[in-house]
Length: 436
Image 1 (cartoon, rainbow, N blue to C red):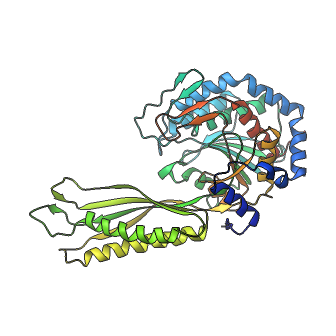
Image 2 (image 1 turned 180 degrees about the horizontal axis):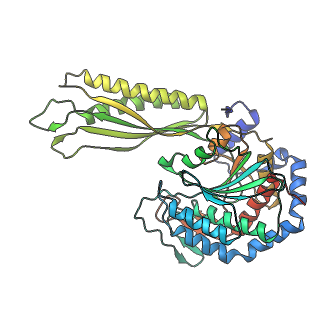
């Protein structure tokens, strides 16, 4: 597995500094980082008659794209329950003329558009799942030009874009040298832990040569670096008993308190300097009643870093802190002992692709040619996996204007939505090789 330290490249370091101080664009640096040969290649491609025809088709098909967006949004897709949505988008592709469509072993949707030469595979991806649990009301409400619904943007808009791009390519008879895989992945969010894309890049899987994800934000996002994370559930276990009758018995909640104190002190000291690294205790649970000594207590912890080594080091700090905290509590004279189990519930690798990577250059140039400001970013997306393996990969924005992601009040407005679809099509065709 090839991973690149985010801070070994001086050019990238400058971009990271810009990212962390909150500058959301490359401003005057655009001309300095764009490969003029790549920009000329894409500029020429934009003028091809079949590409222009595809752009026109995308604009003419906006009402259908909106209809598809609403239909897909109103199909709930909690983590590990994406099947119905996968079947719906499969149906849309079949109706659009796709004849090589499947849902794989883990639930990923894949439609393959064969290239004229084959041998190379370019994947265009959006994720099927949302963060919302089963039973969430996902019906779309429209107020003026704004669509409201959980998941309307993240990432259902991306799925509707896949359909629009496929239809535009079919309608305009666009041929590419490489095969293009249109992919709807499962498990991008939360405890899904990128399980869909991990399956596609597992050992022995068919080799994917380039990966483009549509996920997040306005036009201009060019995510070329993966923000790694590791997540654990720490479970503290004891015998449990009555708060009065068994008083003095080892209490998992008390042990958890010792462990949290140990970890937060050590982690705070570690993260106070060096490349940005974070830690968060996101959930705590356990116990049966106020007058019972619990038999179990647990926490869920998320740790992130832009740097592979740093992520590994805070991982060690967490595990050692948990063990020390329990040991310290067990030595306080309580009756019996508390045991600890650490369960890894998430593992997303870090990685970074250089600005000179052809796919990254194409994404920057395409954004610039459409008149938008490119913004190199680091994020936790499906692209983490191919990036960590050294496979060319970027995550680009879905366009429009939106907000409230991961909330019940998520909203999206179709401002420049067609432009985002055109940009994604241009980038995909350029990466796959336009065949005249």
